[in-house]
Image (cartoon, rainbow, N blue to C red; front, side, top):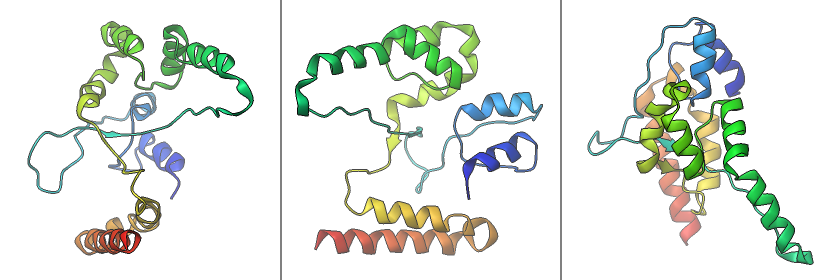
Length: 171
């Protein structure tokens, strides 16, 4: 399932609940949808709840001797004004401290504050784990069955597959 049509259906009142990100706030508000947010549930329900963080990387190669150009480009991209412009255009949480400070103190970003609180204890997908690629593919292919079938059975099946994949890659 592609998230774009699901997000559009949510904003049109056709989907009752989903795991999404802050851009949905604007979509739901524009669609005049009454909505609320809640933290992502934890397996044992104990401890602090946080956000599920998204990790994107910007990388540069060392080859070909463009170190100064790379530094200049990264300084441009991550400069406060450019970060604010990008984050505001897409209603994203900031990735730099100065953009975070600016957005946190600006009333026009009030809708993002509830998400910003979770940044300090966000959990991320285990990209460095060699088993993650296959586990991620299984989740993407099978998680929708939790809605149409027995959620417990689907989630336990995904957990069992994850454990088996982890054991396999560590051998």
